Image (cartoon, rainbow, N blue to C red; front, side, top):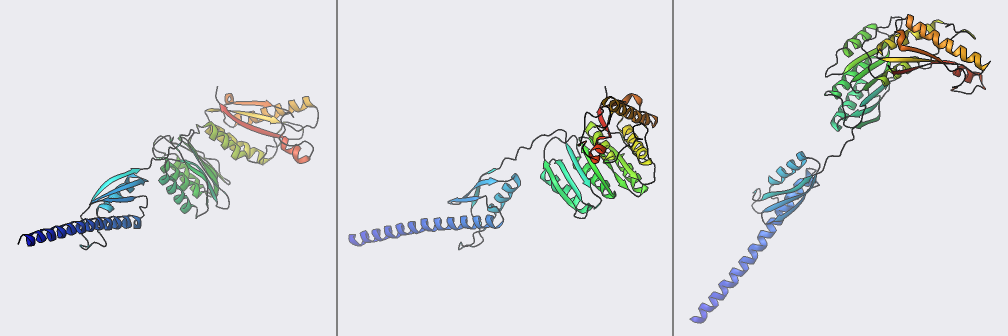
Length: 366
């Protein structure tokens, strides 16, 4: 009798041990199956940065997320994933422990001045460059530009940087690019809070529409426009308060054009010369906060002293014309440099022609 009881106890002990071992194995297998299901779900959703480690019914998530939003989405997905291969399919029995971190955002440089430029050529192609405050803003501006200019946009380095002068930087760029798209050719310059649109159109109504737009900027931005219409009197709007933009305005308006003089004299000749000076006078009045230095230069032919006198006389003739055209005389200075600052060789006719020139330099008022 006692022997039977002993064997019964032994058999029950063996069964209990086997049940315990099987139960432990089953729990581990079920835990591993749950971990695999969570990992598969995360990978399928593109959250490959997450590693899953199971400890019983606890799924521990680790890895570096690109943003708080990605981390939270991965956590929620893991918490709601059902075991794919467990016998009780569809049952969510696990808990999730978040040990993930968020990748530190890159530190953007702070730049000053904060600028943006766009140049539209006669062929309709546009080159953009400058700064925006975020990747979302960068993509927005490039998509809008691509739409406005029918895909003819070249990104010549639109970079991310801090330092935007006021709220609404992206809105100012959007509005200004829309105005540039109306022109046959032209350029947009934004320098901190100053915007300048310059260019050419055959339609005076388009010019007037753009002038109205740039005259009503928001958030402290200052708009100016200098748009040429064939056969129409200049109607420029806005004051340019940036020295750099004023200089680029003079440079672009003058371009490769020349102010011609009578041979060995300081007399301006030719309608194109007067048209150019009238255009420059209008630009000078838009840059009313700055002085305009007019420099006269000659080639090396003739006597040095005579060339010095001739360059001074021509520079002062330009000063007088601009003053007669409404530019404040005290903002204008004329200086002759004779043949001392050539920009080309004096050994060829072409080089000599390049050296005979009038230059305009914008400087801060004293």
